[in-house]
Amino acid sequence: MDSIMLRTSVRDFTDEAVSEGDLEKVLTAAMQAPSARNQQPWEFIVVDDPETIQSLSRTSPYGGPVSKAPMAVVFLGDESRMTVPMMWEQDMGACVENFMVAATSIGLGTVWIGIAPLQDRMDAISDLLSVPEGFKPFCIVAIGHPKEPLAPKPVRYDPARIHRNSF
Ligand SMILES: Cc1cc2nc3c(=O)[nH]c(=O)nc-3n(C[C@H](O)[C@H](O)[C@H](O)COP(=O)(O)O)c2cc1C
Figure 1: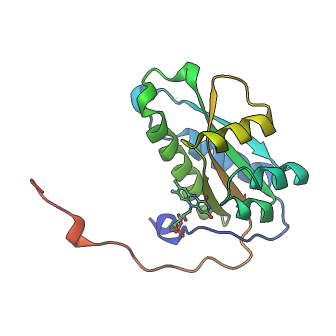
Figure 2: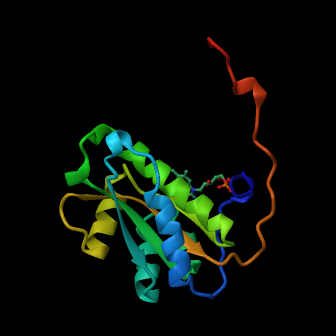
């Protein structure tokens, strides 16, 4: 609960690299996500080459924060694993959220950059990172050590949005 409440989008990072140990932790959390019929459609490209990071930041008009991060992870869906194809984006959303909350729990910052279902952004990533046919770019998450400490944000809990037994 503490990490969920503390997580916030981080768009500026220090130069410190993300350690291989921390990367493994957050990817472990990502792959622990629920998915439809346990199809686990996810695949990941870890980008830490500075030039590729800069190019990746330009695959979306809102990808600027990627250019300030030491690392970015591209989340992909593998069509060959999609036994329930229409659920793939929900699976990926759960996977991304696990990743981001786990990152918060170990002092890292993240921001989600939306890619799917916008075909131009998906194509730009596929071209840049030589993604083979059958793998669909879903989003980018920039990850690193936050430049500023994470500040708790207003609690969004709103009892007026909760209905019981009927709407
Ligand atoms: C599907 C999705 C797409 C997003 N795309 C972007 C993006 O392209 N660039 C960006 O800076 N933030 C992006 N965000 C982050 C949101 O702007 C952010 O989560 C929202 O403003 C709430 O703030 P918080 O994450 O600090 O709670 C995206 C978030 C989601 C869930």
